[in-house]
Length: 202
Image: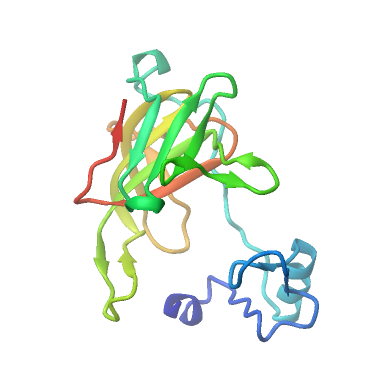
């Protein structure tokens, strides 16, 4: 949060300072997970703060050169991401019919109230350095720099690397030869995994 407040590359949209009607809370969910907004409202708030629109560049989803064809890659029908245990343990199972990875949390299907089970097209695990924060209440995670990455799509896994030089740039994924790893079009979920742990698939 200190980076958000001190940096000029992230707009701090404080709900308590926003004009009335930009944010609202529903009564059918438990706080603090019941706050909502709309893009039209955020655009108005950004204009009031005199903030420019983001120049964020998305990933190129078109076919790019890669040193491996999909048939060369190992199968990955089930994935376990060791980010927590118990009711928060994360795993994915590949669904051949939809060609997506169905998400499970604590061994149960992770459901979205409106759309059913969460099922991204691409799952990416980036290996990062983590440490317990000074206050002992949360983890500090290094999300700039470089590290190993695992890209899961179409029931396969490709090992590669991630890079994010600074907070202003988008994260990128490359193979060991430096070629961009082509990502399938669709919803993509990225999970940061501590370097001391192991991503498992089968």
